[in-house]
Image (cartoon, rainbow, N blue to C red; front, side):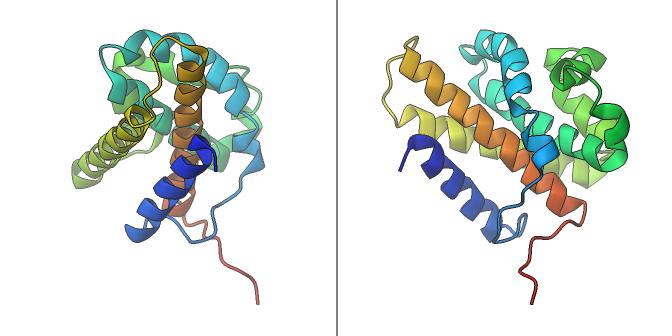
Length: 175
């Protein structure tokens, strides 16, 4: 099992225990197909921030996954035509405030829900960062970059899964 597969399994099981996702991991091809372009656009910002703020660099991608999923649910006809959804989100308030923008303006959270989302993303980013550190990969190597991108990919997918569940899309077997 690859590092990315292990990470996926760990995060999915963690969120399943918290009641934040269903046992069957959701599929949303429209959102999933945007990953490559988002990763390419995000990488310069994320890599720049990783040395000083590793959990923000990781966690912000989870917010991006949530935002793209909300865009998919709200008005995909409009948002699917935007070439760079990451910069669309980032440029609203800048990289440093991406988390606040997504929680306030995209997810429309406030009060306890706002704070709970912040804690959930922060805790998840810490969990992923710990898993990455336990890989004992030499920083600055191609292997380190590949592992970082694997982390971002899973955080994007988990953001998607959490938001789909929050929006009421449940993945159950049909009888």
